[in-house]
Image 1 (cartoon, helix red, strand yellow):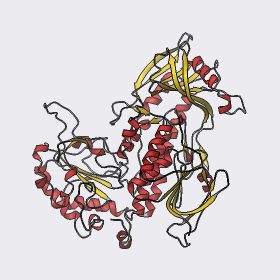
Image 2 (cartoon, rainbow, N blue to C red; image 1 turned 180 degrees about the horizontal axis):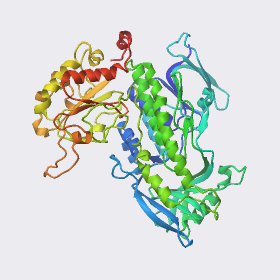
Image 3 (cartoon, helix red, strand yellow; image 1 turned 30 degrees about the vertical axis):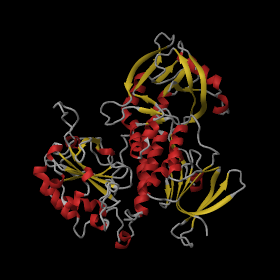
Image 4 (cartoon, helix red, strand yellow; image 1 turned 30 degrees about the horizontal axis):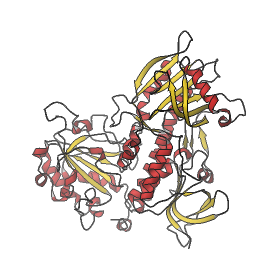
Length: 617
């Protein structure tokens, strides 16, 4: 019998590795993961992790491994232009990487090269007993839903890179994370739609440098009469420098941009300052072109992600980040469909959500790259005015941080209809805001948004206001969540898991509850505030009391107020497994709130009782 898998993943760069890492945290999936390269990336290539991506990686338990490398951290950006007298360059201003209005735990970009990122993922996958099969690629695939293994409807033909071996497997899903020249995309016959026909050529060089340039250890954009450059500090005394180059017609960028030419171009642009390379780790050259695939999927069985479906310049540091979020978005949806908790049609939202996000990024990137790039060789500079370039950078900082992603209203994301939300911090389709609260059971201050790891479950946050006013509502809500027709009763285990290991999902792997009371921790008694239904969530009971420090001084913003809820009445937030807000509900009375939750989930769970029974409880 032909070997069968849950999914075949083509490409073991960061995006493909991210999908495997996500899926193996959600269940014992049988994954065949191949890559045409004989080995992983060792150095260079993508190197920027933005704040929202770091949130996601922390939720996966991978942030500590990243920080163990002591990566570069970019808190500020410097802008340099040609001097007015034409004798060199001058600093024209600086800007914070993330302005104060961006709500993040990490107000910096993290710089760590792709080789290290891949190693972190590969070590993680090895611990989970998944090895990448290298020097293999995909030759073709076809649908065969009526064969002996109809639950694995895709037949995938694989071939070794040298052509000496071949293999045919069956799978439920196929994911192409095989880069801008994606073979999977070609097999799908999906064209790339170009955003901008203008093709600028840039070179890049990584290494250890000695320089008298004042901002060599800061992210810096330089636009001089000799061309444009960007400096990215990588930490540990290493620096990346991007330099625009101008090969003649017909010349390949990589052949033209030799190390001496890149170094000379960098010194020309930075003059009168000098840069000397003590070591060169890596260099390359490439053409900038923005584009996105016309489709991201086929029949909710075949998907593409990362550079296979959207390409842009590396200057804004977004390619790997958006690819990570592609994989993250798809993983939990595949899992909940396979586990029997979501209807299959939900998989259509992968393309709907991620294609829209990519289109918004590409719109910005086309403008940013064109403003940054000169259209003529050195000596004939023709760059946009500095003020326009800096303005575009600042206006799009929310987008480049990752927090500007907004998913459209669909079956997973409902427009807000509550009157209690009067702030922009909490919005449907956006990532759940940061909130520091006190965990009641042990008095520890914790980050509410990180309390539940990425495990595929919906997170339902009940901001319960003042206990003296809302306890009856909370008890009524608990009663109606257990009623015969409730979604939550339908997907509840027969035996509630009250162990410490099961603390996140005592009732079901499909959902978890957290309750946040606006009261001092010392005033919240677990036995009094939690009805029987919620008693098993004692590790997810919190006090919203961080606005005052131990000395009575203002410390942090009240979580209820930040979410836009009345501190006395509270409200409910349904957060998807990927950390994005699904819907916001009022906490009026228990029955109404339970019915509102049921309405949200009834729209996405399988429609028949037979499908519901198939759920993995």
